[in-house]
Length: 187
Image 1 (cartoon, one colour):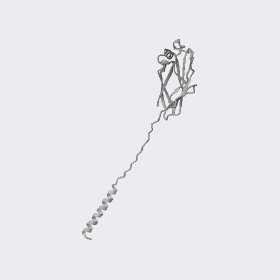
Image 2 (spheres, rainbow, N blue to C red):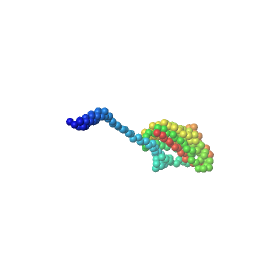
Image 3 (tube, one colour):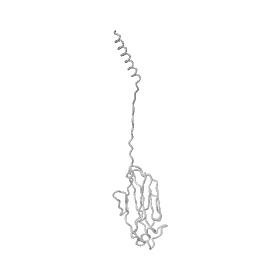
Image 4 (cartoon, one colour):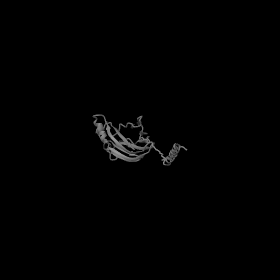
């Protein structure tokens, strides 16, 4: 065999061994990934009532109880049922019920007197939450667990001349007020 062929065959043999050695030192790799979709829930509460003359806004967020009166100096509206319903996808855990200042015609002394003299009882899930002068109610916080599609019963009763609430005075005669409450839920 010619020397240049021997050199070429030797070089080819060495290159083959090098390729085999390169394969023996090969490193395998692999990877995997994961993901998770996270969707925020929605807290959506609506109001309703079976009280005579009550009406609910189309959004379900406003409820107007039927008008009451004219009254005598001693009266009660009886308990007006109010139902909160969670139409959302997450549970409501807390509710704050706040009385807004009663709406009275501007400059009406009789309405101002009536707002000071009327009492209110607020019940929630069968328990009395507040019972006293309308003007002193302020905010009331309730802890609850209102699951999606669940309802929470409450009730409002306005009165004068019963229990510790005295009868209306002559100053309230002819007055007219519209008490407003706001229920704020958090989840």
